[in-house]
Length: 397
Ligand code: CS2
Ligand code: MG
Image 1 (cartoon, rainbow, N blue to C red):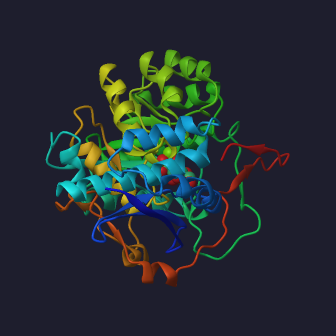
Image 2: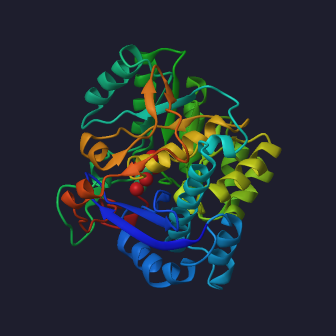
């Protein structure tokens, strides 16, 4: 079936999302993909419309692998976050078309279910530690979460969501990785005491620490049994990950900033990590996630695909299809879906008792209400930056 058009839908129902819609010769069959990249949405849109759209029109939508390779290798300047995000949106939309054409849900095309529902975790957010402690207790007792996630340093995730209005410069947050490590561990221990021993606690260190600070924190947390420690250090230096691995015993999840299969390789093949947690959008979609997942399975590494609120319910749905059909699934991060987002994006996983389920529909199972999307126009926004209060120097956010 020929591709007749590639369109974009850029909208901000609480957070900027960039969707890609691929139309086919059959007016009833189109595909939806997510190409959202927090803080750089317009750049991805421009690449898609100016360069990728003309070359895709007229191609056979069935040839997903061919199109993936054409965009990745055929550009010569391969990879990078902008290109991989556009490639992901296109890849998801093509898988959606394939599922709709076959009349099968995506998970069925991926080999069928190996589990009925998907274990998930949610973010404990709040402005003060007291608020977060109360939230953690509520998540476990009222909502039935089996695993919760804390994050180092940030009072809340408000800085990453941008419906508050257009910005001209990134928000600055105070942060001192050298001096605030003990606060990180005290907070974890308090939460452990409140939720008890049976609940899994994930700690997202958000690439914020040097290897030696990360090792210090992780060693202190070893007796409190973290489910995993997420992204303790920046992703750039593989030797640093090796060093952290060699000096601590807690499970490590890593990789939300990776943007290719090859960046994932050293951590997986050397077993410097236990959970690979790339963002599907950044690594090029379903086609690439399957390959990374298969390499991980070979090395006894589990998946924990990135799933914050700044990926849309379309990516959450794709994560779900991958999780339900992969033997080496570990856990899924669950973003809270705001009511305004639900106005724009229809479908996606549903939370119940610590797990995610999804209704059977052909393809990915999501659609965009384009009229609703127009009611929430794009607003320029930036991911915040961190500076040390002492000398105002920049550090990893
Ligand atoms: C975080 C993300 O979900 C996570 O684990 O690391 O919320 C991250 O901060 C955002 O995706 C940045 O846009
Ligand atoms: Mg993270």
